Length: 288
Ligand SMILES: NC(=O)c1ccc[n+]([C@@H]2O[C@H](COP(=O)([O-])OP(=O)(O)OC[C@H]3O[C@@H](n4cnc5c(N)ncnc54)[C@H](O)[C@@H]3O)[C@@H](O)[C@H]2O)c1
Picture 1 (cartoon, helix red, strand yellow):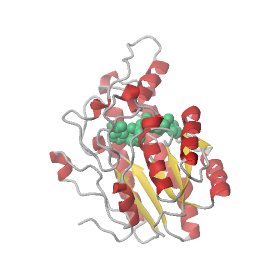
Picture 2 (cartoon, helix red, strand yellow):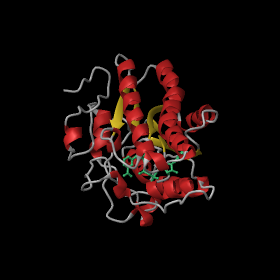
Picture 3 (cartoon, rainbow, N blue to C red):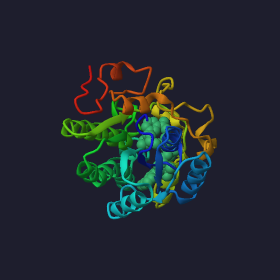
Picture 4 (cartoon, rainbow, N blue to C red):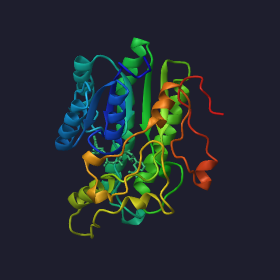
């Protein structure tokens, strides 16, 4: 059986977009899946879709930035699916704009979800992986904006740079263990990401500043969109892309997890990313 067939995977942000794409790919690969998301309505729809596709699924409502609920969520899904051996930290948000226009509240929200969320995920599952001593894997989701400074998305860019550093440290610390670490680096993918940002900023607004409507995902890509191997881009604008038309995740990241080898999912790199080595995954699997 090809790993992760038969394994149980915990996928955050799985109610939409890239997280849902990952969950779908895992079901196809024969893994049991625990989709986790803060959006209860979309999570229920996603769980139904995955179950209807033949998956063994236990969904859990979860705010990844809340450390108190994570152990309970982990216990619940492990009771239902068996030990989790694959953690996919996909949940993430975008928000704010130019640094001087970004409210502290939005800054903290973005860093809380994108940085704390991945740390809390790893801190919850790593001791479980270690105590079992069997093969396990952590897949963190960064962004091209975690490699190339991207103007006007400062909070997200700072969080994704932090996520890249965090993942590199994790990889070093787990080098001699059975726990592999990979980094997913999406380019531009048409998802709900900017709608979520717009909604959060609207909630955050006290009327003292103009809240911009949801912005297009092209904010991520000042130049032409970069095709990714991790998620096939939809040609639909983000406003019309919901959970049912989430990107499908192709073999890219899963072959990186399986073989295991380092992976930089973005196929056509920008000048800057081309100079950056792909991040390594499994212990001992140094990048060349
Ligand atoms: N879409 C892009 O162009 C793009 C580019 C680079 C990186 N990314 C990254 O990919 C990841 C997935 O984003 P997406 O594009 O699929 O967006 P999306 O909005 O479609 O999906 C993100 C999911 O995360 C969930 N989420 C948000 N806050 C959460 C929280 N506190 N706890 C639990 N779940 C939470 C949302 O409800 C949503 O279902 C993110 O980390 C994002 O930064 C996306």
